[in-house]
Length: 136
View 1 (cartoon, rainbow, N blue to C red):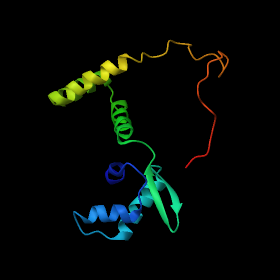
View 2: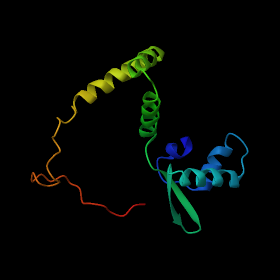
View 3: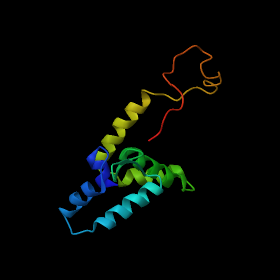
View 4: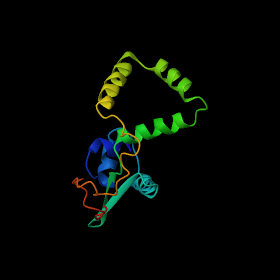
């Protein structure tokens, strides 16, 4: 996944292979198998281009990391204590990044209870949503 995220665009098996071969010898079929497994697990989407597939991540690395953190936190019997321990493991740079993230999050307070009780479009606001469209 790291290699696919680094490209920041859809990639072919051959592109990932050449990238990996800069560090070690690896077979084309190995890379193809791993990308296919990631696709079947829902981590990558793919489009056929000629005889090859182009693969791209379903979500960003940051979104994936946030989901991992959320899953780990959700397994705790004492989430507050888990956060205290997690904060204690952070470097000064990570704590500063956390402070920045909390400042940004404060700009987007949660919706008050019942705020989304009106049916879609009932308030006359244009949400910009066009409904379901084609997926890749």
